[in-house]
Amino acid sequence: MKIATLLDKKGRTVVTVKPNATILDVAELLRRRHIGCVVISRDDKHIEGLVAVRDIVYAMAEREERIRAASGDDILDAPIERIMTHEVHTCTENDTLKHVMLDMARRHLLHVPVVADGELCGIVSNDDVVRYAVEEMELEKLVLQDAVLVSRTLDQLR
Image (cartoon, rainbow, N blue to C red; front, side, top):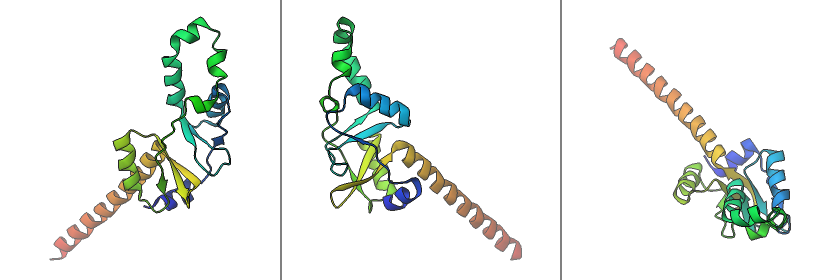
């Protein structure tokens, strides 16, 4: 399956935020939208970074002493660009689901933005990959069951 097909099924909506959005604003957006990451972009087309829930958690853990000593506002009000992943791995609509799945596993990625002509056009999450991989396995299972049924029928006719 091509990534374009996956995006046609799941949708091409990508939640983006500006680099100066606060960590607290992004955390609230992630919670409210029930999503695992946002793409950082000034124009909603070009990727500057990516922030996943785990980036926020890691940032809090790294600053644990400062958070305990302060009210936490200095951390939570910091711009999201301070903790975003700058080197974002992307894929294209022409990539296969298998290729993206292997790349995500090899690089330990939970989200991969999709680009077309250098512009953001979708995002693939680990949930998407698992969901559609399971669908493909179910289809393969049905095909194999049919092949076994045909083989048995042919054996009985001989």
